[in-house]
Length: 386
Image (cartoon, rainbow, N blue to C red):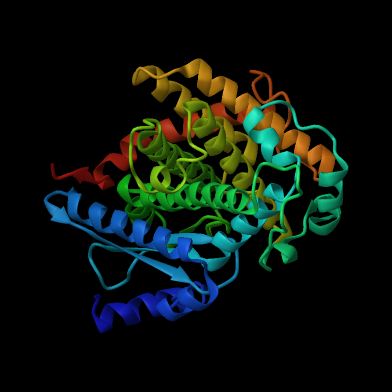
C-alpha cells in the first residue's frame, strides 16, 4: 500500500492533468471485465519490477501506475512533484474501452475473423459493409460508438469460430495495444526523457500519448518527436522480447494459446493490433483538433518503425526476418482492405515499404533527431542494478 500522502500527490497530479480520478477496485469489479483486472495486475507487477532494478548514480526510483476513470483514449507519464525519484504512469479507462470495442467490432464479422487466420486479402463482403453503418461516420470511426460496449452476437451456424473465440481474440488485440502504450510510457522514464525535459525545458511536467506537449518551441517539438520515436522502439522491443519465443509462458501465452499457435499468427497479431491502435490514436487526435501533430510521428511512421525494429531484432536473435516482413505486409493488407470495405479513410498508404514514401522520408528525419539526442540523454538514463 502506498502512503496517504502519496495517494494525495497522485490525486492532485491527476486533477492538474484533468485526468479524472483513480479507478477504484470496486469500479473494476462493477464496470470492467475480469481480464482488464488481470492485465492491470500484470502492469503493476512490471512497475514493481522496474522499481526494483532501475537506478541512476546509485539512486533507486519508484514508479507508480494508476488507471483513471476518465473515458478517453489517453495516457501520460510524469514525475511527481515534491518527490526526488517517483514517477507516475496514468492510463485512462477509455484507452482500454476504445481499443476493446474497436476490436470487438472487427471480430464481429462472420467472414472477417476466419480470414485473418487464413491470411489472404480481405474480400469485399456485405457483412463488413453492414457493420460499417454502425461504426463509421464521415469516413472516420465514430468515437462515440467506441465509448459504449460492443456486444458480440451469436455466430452463424456454418461459422466454426464461436462468440467466445471472437471475444478472446479481441481481448488479445486489446492487450497488445494497452501493453504497447504502457511500455511506451515506461521507456520515457527508463531512457531519461522525463528528467531530460524537466532539466532543459522551463515549465515541462508531462508527456501525453494523445495530447501535444505544451511548448512554443518548434525545435523542441522536433526533439519531442525524436523522444516519442524512441519510446515506440522501446515498447516494440519489449513486445518482441516477450512474445517472440512461443515457449514463453507469460500472461498472453497462457490465456490465448488457442490463437498463438505459430510465430506467423503471433507476429501478424502484434502488427494488426498496433496498426489499428495508431489509426485510433490519430482519429482521436483529429477529433480533438490535433490533426497535424507537433509532438508525435504519424501513424505510418510509427508502424514502419515498429516493423523495422522487429526485423532487426529477428535477425540479431536468430529469428526469421522474412517472416516478419511477410506478416507485416499481410497485416497492412488486411488493414487497408478493411478500411476500403467499411468506408474508413486509412492513415497508412499501400506504398509504405517504398523508400520514396512519405513514411520512409519521415522516419529518416525522426531517426536523425533521435540519434542526435542520444548523447544529451545519457546522463538522465537509468541502468540495471544487476
